[in-house]
Amino acid sequence: MVPIVTIDGPSGSGKGTISKSLALELGWNYLDSGLIYRCYAFLHSSKVENIPNEIEKIQHNYSLEHESITYQGKDITDLIRGSEITKLSSELSQKEEVRSRLTMIQETYRKLPGLVAEGRDMSSKLFPDSLVKIFLTANLEERVMRRANQLRNAGQKVNISELKNEIELRDERDTKRSHSPLKQTQDSTLIDSSSRTVREITNLIIKLVNEKY
Ligand code: DC
Image (cartoon, rainbow, N blue to C red; front, top):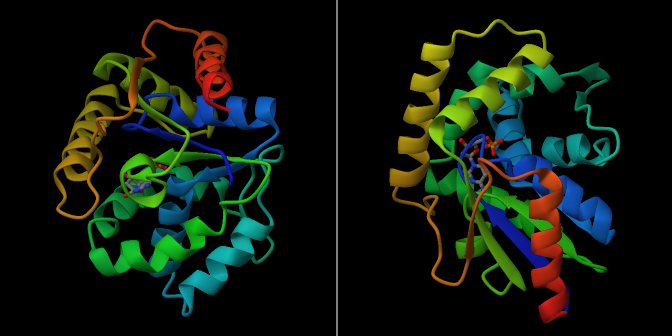
């Protein structure tokens, strides 16, 4: 049996940072399911055919240690993390046919010695049998500031009130869609990351893993 930790939460909740920290510390595989939806949106907007095949090529060149995302020899990291693809990935992820096309790709990450999977429907849909399920949140102001820093680090200009609106809209789409919406499952542990350090949260989750595995 492959042990799995699932971490779901809204944009800016810190799930990316925590999941990577956890995967590195445990030495387990790491799935950023949001990145799969972002790749889909990027390839869809570039009118690429056979999208799953092309996503596999992008995944092949991506690693937890070297976080840059490349496609056909070009660095597309900033593009794929930028506002346009962010919005498009959230819109396309509402469609059931898109979700089911991307399910198989995500399931391939279930591999020994273990998996840390982050997203919106990891606990509810993709890996309902996971060992530890976390629902990570943070207050809206904190989430907006984190996202603003991410965009600034990628060299993009930020308008805080526009960004706040974008995040609220995306939260609304991601939580209210009819197929696999973001929601806390009954068997997951709620962690508010607003005033906790990455170290504290990582330790807390490792403790939960050690209690069960
Ligand atoms: O985690 P992220 O911000 O990179 O995700 C981008 C979008 O992809 C998000 O707004 C909704 C969609 N997504 C999803 O529908 N299901 C997932 N498991 C992960 C992401």
